[in-house]
Image (cartoon, rainbow over all chains, first blue to last red; front, side):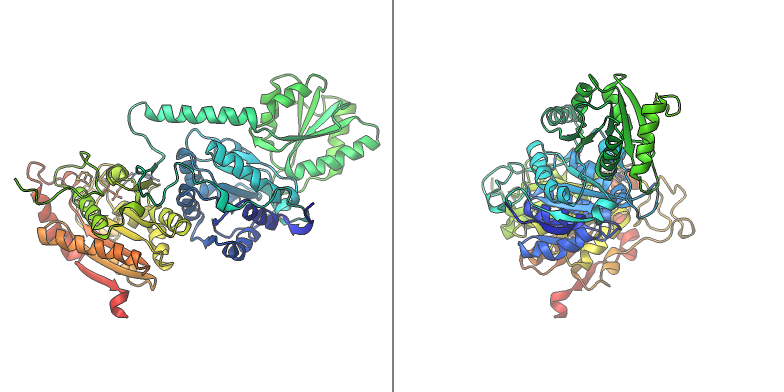
Length: 362
Length: 251
Ligand SMILES: Cc1ncc(C[n+]2csc(CCOP(=O)(O)OP(=O)(O)O)c2C)c(N)n1
Ligand code: SF4
């Protein structure tokens, strides 16, 4: 058993990435993720890696595009407005089939918004975000411990399927301090095989090209469809979720990240009152755990999505269930914190008063 | 028959797509010759731009990466810092380097990234059909300034060598031209030096090459040498040739 350490979420993420073999980081300061580049600036040189504070988010993600093309494990992080700027490069990386890790420690938006934790970048994260047909592997940690442990999985999936991976946290998770236990053994980068597409020193092999374009007629379609097959495999093999007290539940709260923590507290309060409430927590936001939601709808008829946004993930709940249950929404946008009491009130409303006051989203 | 000038090993035997009289092809060959001369082909990575040279990634016989408009110096930074044993060069047009990618080139110079930048200044956007570039001359016609560029509406042409020369991190900056045979030879020497600097870890080196775009300048396509007049008469007075910085010489 490895020891537990008290760490801030952002620091755990940075340390977790280094342990998972990250050897290059480029980023630009923005609250509430600054601890990530700060940590990397002294930690990476210790392990022979490189850190760059870039002139902008646009430059940072393009440095990643270059670093990822060498086959090395690399990372960038930012918060909402910065992630918007990184979308150009993320799209290029997706188009060039380059694996890397990007973390978005979300703050309130749109625009400059505020620096509080929020979940309003869900659509941007799970629908591509930049231009073109592409997906990211998206993991949503619910605390510092998962922040520290998710980079490993992200790199595994990213390199296996050649897709960028995104850790979607929020300001609260980035800033909270919790005991962190790194579960996987530290990756020895000298044992990582150089991918057969990596650019570098070419002594006898044929030249390699990394590019995101194919102007020959019909060829881009072939490339995009080939990539879609890998997306399908990810949907088959890489779905992660967590369930609490769903065995006898009449209502399932569906929430990720900070909302899931609040929902857990609300669930406990509801249980104390004798209300049969459980929690379904998607850990991968793309691929979304659709199949499991459909299975659950065999015995649970009411689902309440709890979100720190106007309601974005709720669309995936609806798309998954496709009419197989009633879907309600408890939402709070603008970087405001949801309280367990508020969620409990929604649960009671939905359970006691029925659908009229808490109209199901149609 | 005696073969006097064989194809450089660093340039693949492919038919290039450039217009007759274009400078891009000439500069490609010079880069390839420099790579051969220095024996660096096997460890060189080319960062290709968007613009007319978007297919540079096909022509060079080395590893290549094609990036977003203007981001070449950032991509080169990521490559070089991840694999310091490689030789990395970015190839960029004036729209690419002096407009959308201005921040990236300036900051690569500030950090004195140990990379080589080949900057093709043809005073126009070639690939997208002849729009005004940041280097377009006052009075020069382009599709987004059909009566000719005016300073009042669009400001003045930017001189990149002069601008970057104010930056401590820039190790070597030279402006050359490929509109004459001696200019071609000087360009070759400058490119070779810019690569040698990287081999010797001297820091950021850039060669700005004044180059022809007979197609979008509206010069006579049946006689591409007409375009060389535009370089000589129009561009040279605005973009004087020479070494703008040589940190080595300054000690
Ligand atoms: C973000 C972005 N904006 C615009 C374009 C369209 N575009 C392609 S090439 C080009 C101009 C290239 O001009 P320059 O860099 O001078 O190279 P040249 O074609 O003259 O060789 C533009 C604007 C693009 N590819 N990406
Ligand atoms: S448009 Fe101009 S720069 Fe582009 S290939 Fe033709 S001559 Fe060269």
